[in-house]
Amino acid sequence: MTDNPEFVQIRHAQKSFGKLEVLKDISLNVARGQIVAIIGPSGSGKSTLLRAINDLDPLTGGEVWLDGVQVNKTLPHRQYEAHINAMRQQVGMVFQHFNLFPHMTARENVTMAPKMLKGLSNDEADKLAEEQLEKVGMLDRMEYYPSRLSGGQKQRVAIARALAMKPKLMLFDEATSALDPELVDEVNQVMKKLAEEHMTMIIVTHEMDFAASVCDRVLFMDQGVVVEEGPPDVVFRNPSKDRTREFLRKHLAGAK
Amino acid sequence: MGLDFTIIPKYLDIILLGCAWTIGITIAAAILSFFGGILFAVIALYAPWIIRQPFRLIEWMFMGTPLLLQLFLIYFGLVQIGIDLPAFVAGVIGLGLHFAVYNSELIQTAILSVDKGQMEAARTVGLSRSQALRKVVIPQAVRAVIPPIGNNMIALLKDSALVSVIGVSELTLSAQRVIGKTYRPFEFYILAAAFYYVINLCMEWVQRKIERRISISR
Ligand SMILES: Nc1ncnc2c1ncn2[C@@H]1O[C@H](COP(=O)(O)OP(=O)(O)OP(=O)(O)O)[C@@H](O)[C@H]1O
Ligand SMILES: [Mg+2]
Image: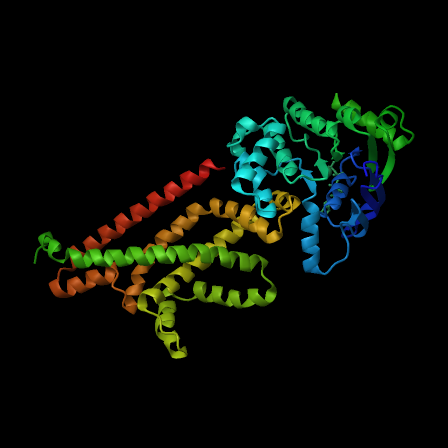
């Protein structure tokens, strides 16, 4: 079970927005507990691929499978809605701009979905909130509204909110890109902790150092295709494709 | 004949009773217009075409015709098709739906301007679209339009005088009745105006309270 190589499976993913083909026949397998980083230039389709996994941007072709169940299977509308809501409960997602619910406290952000969808009692929900907010180091800000939290704190609450549904898979879409540089590390630490707990993660990132330090595999995307993939050592130190080399040179130069 | 305000105490009970009716009808119609406004907004934005169309007709009716006519229609007109409403109820429905349409316009705009990341975040934790609307999008939209809704509610208070035409003994009609007996229009219209002013102040106070409460939560 632990070494099921097809825990997350993307088969021939294809996505077009009108005439614009954003994903061109992408396939990807992620084993349980694996951590995969997706890197690539702006507009290459990284977010679109990530958002296809929980059907936020439904694919126009191909299949997504999670733990033996097809996410984007063909069903009548009503059944599909129920199916997709159930699937999404198993997939946590963290956004660049946090998207915390501004009218709820940190605690309420975390407990809202479990209370609503799993019928937790108030006591159970509060315990869950403590547990999850503790994990991200936000226990002391439990009753704060998002407006009174820093970007890094917001993102940590957003991670706790996603974890509260006990997902099997976590998706991160540039979780630290909107943060001031000095706040990046506190979020990275939380993600590292999840890595140590063997959470399966797919991480879209511009931070090559972070990707190199936590990921088992790196995927370099450009113009809707996977140009190169492999262990971070290989992709970062010894890429085989010119496009990868060029991207890394530009990106690492640009970062300085 | 000069002004004589000493006559007021003798008829104060009638005026106060009128006040009570005005307050009652305003509160009831305000509540109806608030929840009705949310319902209309959701229908206008999300209901299937077949439901949306009749509602557009209702919306047009309440926005495009005089409130006075609407009250006549609900009170006198509906009797003909077997719906015989007490005047107070007819007044609440007329005022409430009339202002629900105006509130709905505000709420629709507010719903559309809630960041779409909010809906996405709610959907990614597994909420259905209607759950996400109910728990995440609509509460934020409503918070954003509390001040203009408050203005609508002040307008509602003022327009509540119109229900006098279907015989609800609210403040304006009570003043008129007293004037009929005393021939003292200035004194009693001023008195009624003063009461409207006080109710108005109370409403503004409540609105500020609500705003303060929810602005902490932003
Ligand atoms: N909803 C949409 N409608 C139309 N085009 C879209 C939509 N979402 C994305 N695109 C287009 O798809 C392409 C890929 O976008 P995507 O957001 O996946 O790129 P990305 O690799 O995540 O880029 P970035 O690093 O800037 O986030 C872009 O050209 C973008 O303009
Ligand atoms: Mg992106």
